Amino acid sequence: MPEELNRVLVDHLSALLLCPTRSAVEQLKSEGIRGRVEWTGDLMADLVIKNIQKIKKRPAIRPYYVATIHRNTNTDEPARLASVLNMLGRLKHEVRFMVHPRTQKFLRRSPDLRKRLKLYPKLRLEKPVSYTHFVELMASSEGVITDSGGIQKEAFLLNIPCVTIRPSTEWGETVRSGRNVLCEPSPQAVSRAFVRIQSAMRRKAPRVFGEGKAAERTVRSIAACIAAGSRKGGRS
Image (cartoon, rainbow, N blue to C red; front, side, top):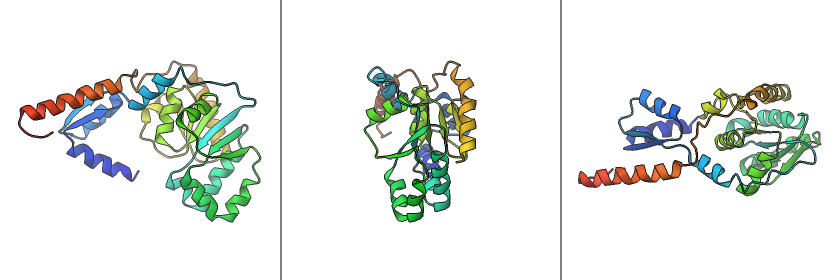
């Protein structure tokens, strides 16, 4: 992804690198990073674990998927976005499509795409909602279809099947667990992906993102780094 270049540059300039997963630690070591590398766990996992008891998993009147699509590779070309809409509209369950402002912009620009939406009665376009409401929607769904990195993690933490409409992901741990499948935007491919995920869902999910203590470790690590810099009479 384009932003990966910035990440690599920042990693090599940093004195302290705090990693959300053990595999991220190994990745940095393989890149010859000179800064201090520590595993903390993932802050997003803290948030989900802390709020999991507050999340109301409501039985749905009818089964549905939750979808979010916003990356330029899926939205900027009308033909690609048409394929995404066709995929979402032809799945067996209703799809609650939370339309990102970026995606909304391209839909407004294309009368043909807006006409196409009328072909898909099971595709519900909805406005973005609050974090808690969105997590509740995911928790009560049959699965998530997305191209968002954060939502891949949230689905994993909520133990919800996830299909990612991208050829690669920054969260390979979710794919290796079998709970997330990278997929092209076709209804047949996505349907097969959800079937594949079912066997993985019967196994206990690994705690690759930590147990909810990432914030505490992060604060301790930053404080120690600052203190070490002060003792040296310099800045970290």
